Image 1 (cartoon, rainbow, N blue to C red):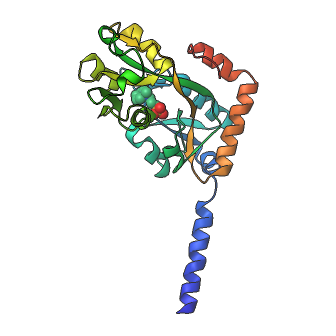
Image 2 (cartoon, rainbow, N blue to C red):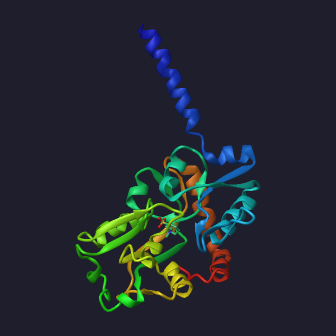
Image 3 (cartoon, rainbow, N blue to C red):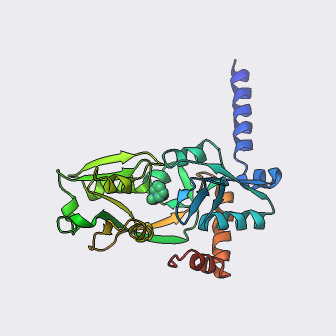
Length: 256
Ligand code: KH2
């Protein structure tokens, strides 16, 4: 009996040590880098519905990473509400950038960061008098729209504890609720807000300043230090060589 328990223990130990091998090895062996991406985040990851091809800042980053690894890149469709689960369930080796949040950090690893943004509220221009500050949106007769599974959904609870929160599921988006009058406001990155107010002139940014400086990074499996170090060092090397600077300019993004 004791012998049996002992040999089972040895087998378990052996099996876990095999599992602990780095993704870096499997990626090289398979000749493929599997990248989870949502394809709905302008300008980070955008899927062209006509061709089903991905493009964007993070797509260029991942193509370059795969090129430097000497492997081909395979973009795996992901959704915001399950993007973290895709990492823990090994559906992909890495994700395109997401906002670093404490909740995500509990189960996934974050690489070095390469982009920072601030958060702003969007409201209808015709309501600007009523909603001219962050504070004016924190009220029990106010509805704030969020998109399920995003960092904005996490943050809205903190910013607007008194307000009603309404979460919609992508491809539906929070700002569409504001446009349709079903919500009074939503929050998003200043980068996206500046694009949206051009596309939808009915919308405006609440002129009360940015909050919540947030950092973007790729997600990798939590325990895999070798793979995380590899990608993080690659990011630093590419920052030093000017690769990121050029790419930020290509997509009209501010540098870190
Ligand atoms: S985050 C990304 O990592 N966004 O901050 C959120 O959760 C991206 C704002 C869903 C595309 C649709 C744009 C929400």
